[in-house]
Image 1 (tube, rainbow, N blue to C red):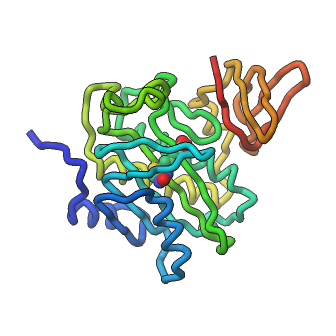
Image 2 (image 1 turned 90 degrees about the horizontal axis):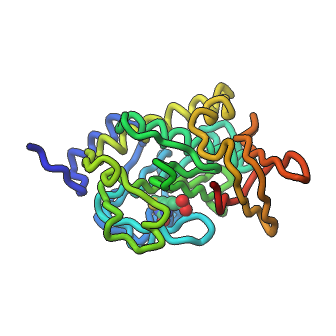
Length: 267
Ligand code: BTN
């Protein structure tokens, strides 16, 4: 029986380079945050061919959206891609859409790995199984480079949440906890990277129909949601997303279209 390791060997890294769209890989056994490291690489001004993959087996200070931390242990997939927005034929203005496209791609990659689970998308960019978060995405522009984008992705694959802090266990899950199965991390990563390449290419050509692709996997459609957007809190019935990726929430004040925010609650 083959054992499944949480370490990436030289052979694994060569496979990732050969079988995916990443041009360069920087691998660390341990790192505070792959997204911080990607930002450092961008700032250092050294030449690199995008997308550059920063991969680690163990992240010790992972960051999530809204200044949250991202908990993980070995067995999780934690990586960041330093991308060039010109390859996506877009600028910073379309980051809200890129965020949704990234979530669609991660979800598609995980479906290739696990055919049994019903993966769902929680606007704007979380992937869920059975109303629990299994993957999170953090998009951050590179401050002094208008084309630079860091896409940070964390996926709970073989890291059981049994040892996670209570607040993480309350809302999260891991693929290994859902089916009591472990997955080959290199294969998982390659599936996700290939879906990112395919979805970004489709988006760049203007062929990706967001509403159409998101619809079947939308976790929030038909549910009552409470969304924090800036200083405002908006509650109402969710009607999924619109053609441009806006979340549609219907309440007494009418049909609200939200372009950014966090869904704090859903029924
Ligand atoms: C979220 O759902 O809040 C986003 C979580 C993003 C976590 C990933 S793990 C790899 C990358 N490095 C980080 O520090 N964060 C992202």
